[in-house]
Image 1 (cartoon, one colour):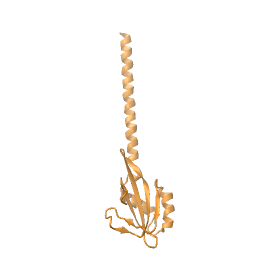
Image 2: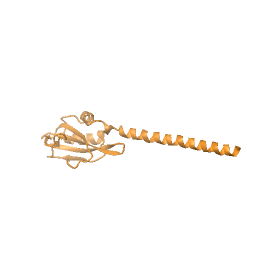
Image 3: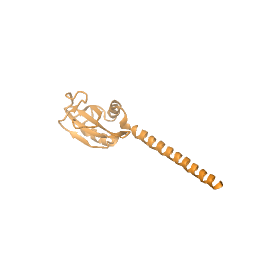
Image 4: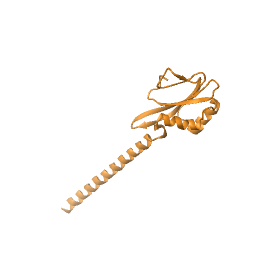
Length: 144
């Protein structure tokens, strides 16, 4: 009888320990997902636009904007200087802003298992001075 109780007690302890271990693993998984989902790029495009305008203020030249974007915003993707290519409004695709632009793949953030890229376009007038920034999130950027 003592041997059966000893085996039973060992099994209960093992199952209890496994339950605690599984609970800990689930907590770690959900915690890491919430940290990733709350990355800077998960903020609204308008908030990101406001933050980027504080770094690259209207009126600066294209030449001044590029190093600021690289150093202070630190995009995780490509940065393309597009002379003669205006920014396009996402909501009104036919509406152009400026004459020149810098398109930046700012990076991405994960919401659960969905990888969401975030893009920014710095819009410049004919004198190559910054007039606005457009920030948007897209799964497929093929049309832009």
